Image 1 (cartoon, rainbow, N blue to C red):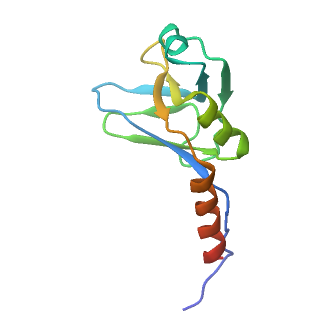
Image 2 (tube, helix red, strand yellow):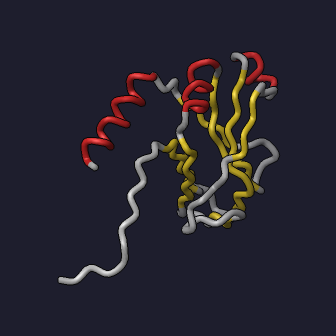
Length: 128
């Protein structure tokens, strides 16, 4: 067997966001976002203290992306030290802005402990 091309190895960690359309109509995903809230009350009021737009880089899901019923959409956010810090210091939510509602669809990101992140990085190094 002959292998053509070169494999690309990526040792970075990512926060994955997966969305499925369970409705009966198409919707268009226009942005992938991260919101950091000060606490529960700022979440209820919809007032994040930190915001970020994820630089979406998956060629299979170009933005804007028309999500048809039954289809899924996936995006990856680079998990760096800042993202880990945001997850520990505030209520971090990842989400998408889409055409079906005015409010974004948000999902809570649990706190990423430093030890868990280091374990994942060490496991990647062992497989190298």
